[in-house]
Length: 206
Image (cartoon, rainbow, N blue to C red; front, side, top):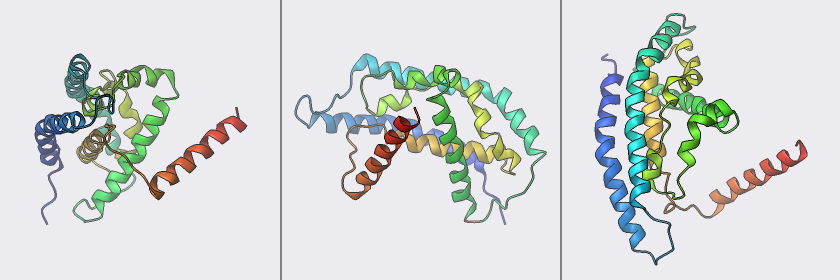
């Protein structure tokens, strides 16, 4: 059986993502203008150009960080404790779940630890919430945030496969950075309940 070429898939995702990003921003901007003035914060040229520039710089530092992070992950992969059959249908869901678990802990720490907040805080500097803001990424983060993904090669996941999963994760997060996407009904109430419980817990243990 021919194994999936995850490196080719990752490259394809980036090639498709760039025109998709700009097309989605154009559609979102058009949809925002259909609403009454003030309904959405909308786009502001300088703010969006800043976000796009930071996204481009992130791509540059991601490319540079490969020379540092990838050899470390390859070295850990040599000491893996298990192997996976990456040609099975269930491997990709497991892979994406594992990557999202690592991302969860990175993101949580990034909001609680000064060293990681220093690289993550610029993602939150815009006063607008639109798809261009999703591109407002950390420039220095790729050089050290990869440490949260180091368990995956130890668990037998090839670094190329991990890179593919991380790319899927990043692309998924793009479309949720918009104030035009609203969730109502029981689904929203579940998360409101969790949020209220979380606030109560922080007050009790403060």
